Image 1 (spheres, rainbow, N blue to C red):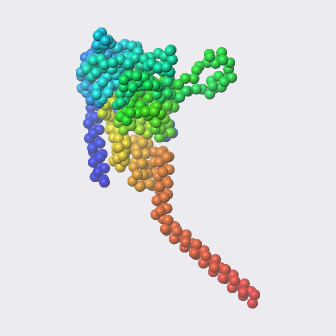
Image 2: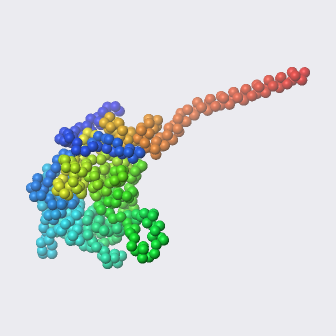
Length: 479
């Protein structure tokens, strides 16, 4: 077992070192996370900036207000150069493979007008939220026009409805989901033929109890002048391999800044810790502008307030935080999109017109690999790596929890309780405690019963002897 554990650590170290040797040594920001009590605690930096690319570097000329980014399954990186109305396709060496700016449509040359969203399917089909043209455009991988999907048509849609698609995603069945500007009913859903089928995943209405009280006692004229209670609109979305849709909401006061919608539009996001995935827990809360789903249920949310990327695992636990606003390499001015491919993270900066690539440090690589192993059901292997994480950060609660859960599965309940207590996981600590009590009683029940029976028999004998002595003494007195 020890040899196997050593081999796991060695393999993980080799895997991580493959990324870490070229990573910059200087850290433009501090690493931190949040503990069980909601206090920020320093933590080793998980990712560092590796390289930066601009439109000039790519040989396409400066990018003007780029709004979206997509990392395809084949490693190609698509940049939506919104201000110039074009799509730049880069390979893994960041060489420009293709520029899509004009396309033939109904016998005429057509183009984009301030597009804001981009999505690429596994087969290479390109979908663009052509915002100011009020349509979603589908293109073949070579950039030729396929179709345009206009505003949804239905009797349930108001005549005043305005269609400005901002983001678009497509599931494996070809269903299209659109985030619309000023659309509070949820995601706009189209079938694979482009027909409107309804709205999905409406946010709950947010209201102030004080305002609600005054509305209840006000006249009709006064109520019309008050702020209306309306649902929050989505501002971005992504889809995972299982077809679950992750959405973000920019409002800082909501407790559902991130949602995971099942096919019925119900939020099934796991929140295993004390705090929902809302980014920073300080007074000035985060405002998520983009979300990206990786493998093993890991997802990353981009905060426009401080320019930070928050990475969560499938249970909603915060793994690490990277990035910030600034003017150094690895910091941003106006981050608008996030993507990842392999172990690399890409952040698109609209104002600077550039992409920053981040790669994991030893700490970040260990956390990612340990979390991947645990999500895959390889708990003992994960525990070995969590031990390595604790050597770098003795306050990393997730590592204690990971080790504790592994020991719980292996039947080492007392040791599991120790680690789960250090990780402040009360739910699993209670499970470990219950199992430990059961095991303890099973092991020592015979001994305790023997002692109890012995005590009981001794007590009975003592009482009989005492009674016999009392009767004998009473007989002597009578004589």
